[in-house]
Length: 131
Image (cartoon, rainbow, N blue to C red):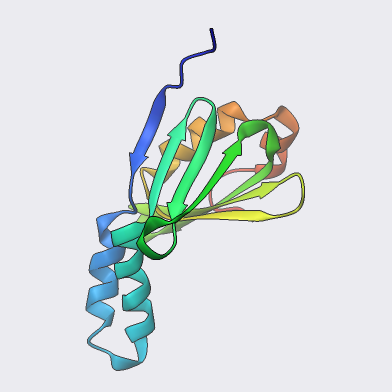
């Protein structure tokens, strides 16, 4: 019998990302940013468990990416929305990157992921906001 998967975070991007995106719609030039924020709000979902990070995205939520913690070599975070949410980039062993945009409670999520990855990856990651 396997280890039970416990969910740490299950949800979509921070609502502030959508609000700022909608406010930017008033400047016609930022309309693509608004559309991006709406699409993220509708179809982007994160599920972070004790075993993996899963992202459901794409048109109508039809794409899914799962990453186990042993595959992560570096985590980079960038605070957004005056620190209320943040973006995170997971670098994997094969050199590919997985972006998590507008994550609520991103500091807590970063700490959780940081505690699950290898010590070498944790050291490469550094503190929040450092690239």
